[in-house]
Length: 328
Image (tube, rainbow, N blue to C red; front, side):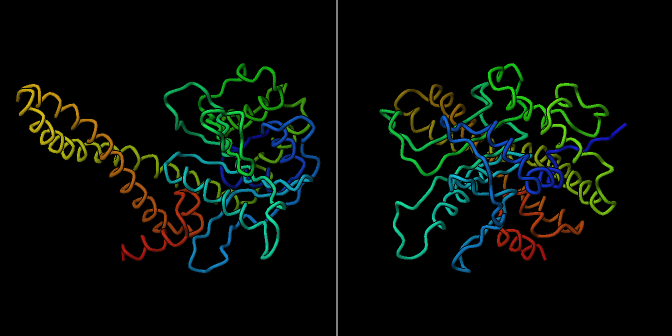
C-alpha cells in the first residue's frame, strides 16, 4: 500500500508540475479561464529564476514558469501562507515576465499575455466564500472593456468544495488532489485512480519515489512551515497588543479633539473605537514584520539556504541576506 507525500510541499509540487509537461498542461487547461479554442497543446519550460537586467534590481524565484503554443507565458506558484508581500510579489513577477518579452527596438505588438496562477493553502479574502479569484485590468465603469496583457488567478484551497466546480470536472479533480492527498492517505479515491493525469501525479507523490536526501528536504520544508505557523500566532498576538495600546492612545487624542465639539464622553467613545481600529491594523503590521524576520533567522540557524528561505517568506534574496547580516 502506497504512502503519499503532500503535493503542496515545494519538493513534490515541483516534481509534478516542473518536470512533467503533460501534467502541467492538464492542470492549466483545467484551472485557467481560457477563451474558447485557446487551450494549451504544448509548452516549453522557462527558467524559474526571474533575473533582472540590471544587477541592482530585485530578482525572484518562482515555482514553475512556461510558455505555450500560443506564446502565452504562465507563472505557477504554490503558497502555504498568505501575506501582503506575496500579493506584491505576484504582480512584480508577472510584470517582469511581460516586460522581458521584448528586446531593444522590437515593436509592442509582439507582446503576448502573461498569466499568474497562485494556489494558496490559506485564506486571504474573508469577506466572501468564493475560492476562485480572477483579476484583469478592466474599466471600472464598464468591466467588459479589458486591457489585455496581465491576468491573475488566485485559488484559496481551504474554501474549495468539489460541488462548487460541478461543471468543471477536471478542475475539481486537480484541486481535490492538492487538497486531499497527504501523508495520511493510503489509498487514492477511485475517481482519482481512474483519471490518467491525476493517477500519474499521485504516483509521483509516493514516498518510495524519493531518495533519503529528498525526503530530508521534504521534511525540512514542513519544519520551516511549522516554525512560521507558530511565529505567526505568537507575533500576531504580541503585535496586536502593542498595536492596540498605540492605537488607543492615538484614538483617544483624536477623540479629545472631537469631544471638544461633541462632548468629552462622546469623544472618548469615538476615540476608543477609532483606537481599536488603528490598533488592530498596526498590530497586524508589527506582528507580520517580526514574524517574517524570526522565520528568516530560525531557518538560517537550521541550515536552510537563502533561496529556500526567500521561497517560503516571499522576500527577495537581498532582503533575506540583509536580515541575516543585521542579526550578526
